[in-house]
Image 1 (cartoon, one colour):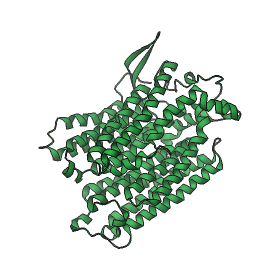
Image 2: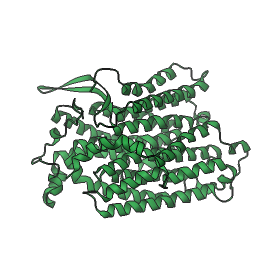
Image 3: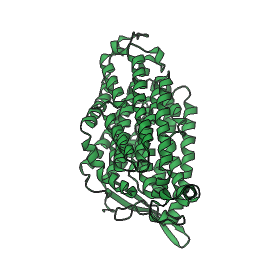
Image 4: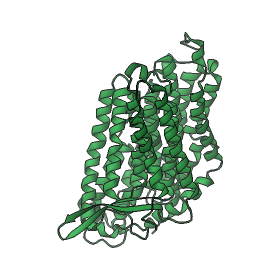
Length: 534
């Protein structure tokens, strides 16, 4: 493992900060038109760098690749010294999510071109600075493997999103921004306490040893009688309850899990999400759905499963049950919505319930499907929020009752919207199907979950079709209720078409050729699933 040179991971990570620095020295008044182009060009170069990472990525090994590791600080704890390291690298899982992040960001920036929010709120320079800072922090979350540095990047993501919602959001933006910040900050405090305990117990904050293997698993098993990973799963009810509610490993597992569950969000930690989505500007909603929510599911896979496998086994049925509840609840509440943006927001609770179900199936199929569905959801739901943003820019309403007949006056836009909606509901041949199908296969073959989990998960697929078709019918079908005064409003602008083309390409590519993405994940997922083989 190369730990000294400037890695391609580091270059990709810090490219957004280069764009941020350029924006800082630009005059926001005289160079307003150039601000968006600097931000867009930076995000595009960052995407190209991530593609180069992919080209250089070797899917035949589970070891971290393109690694850089340097000591950042030394902390004395008693007689020992613990190093805090700048430690970055990628495996198949993090590589796929880095690609998702760098893919979504230029699309979100294109969605901001010509937005009315700058005429109303101004501060266009600050807006793009926050987007660059957010991209840097999100990439950092997916590539950093030192728990303290990971926590720093995790917390930094809160700041730009808080201001994006609070300054450029809708009418109740301050309430939504504060709620988002407080919810996620509260969970993060529990994770910090767990990180400090792990570092003190294990003697390291690094989740990987120099050889590329997870380095702190054995050292955090401090509860009495820890032997195999199956002690908790195979104990009688009294001993199992004792492990769940008294063991150190179980509490550490929950410390990490609560932070990640709020971010996903797993039911019942979801109440901040609809407010944040409804009030956020279009780019904020696209990034929030496309990438930020995946930080939670990624954290569960990267840290909970790797560091606390016994606790994972003991808690798996409970967390999977909450995932299934989220699938049904999110779909049911989505159907009840009259606000189109809130409908798409609640759909995220349902779709990410599938990801949680796949993760806690604790087998290769479930983990593969879950990781692929993280990407699928980011693409499909990001596309849905772009659709809602384009509608709002023209009609200035989010109520479905105010729409109708859009397809008649905007046939190309209607066709694009239909494809993205079908993708989100999991139509075979499109990207959404393969992720959900693999998750259900994993759930059905899981040693830790029963058939009922798969049955109710499948019901969620049907409900998704119900609420998405309802949305499409109300918005696009029937008679046009509110004609625009300006006929040019019915025409798609160039930047809107440019934002949809890559989304449509990915929808069909991932649906028709998923083997490309499965190959990237295989070995990395197998190495995690091997922890839970009986």
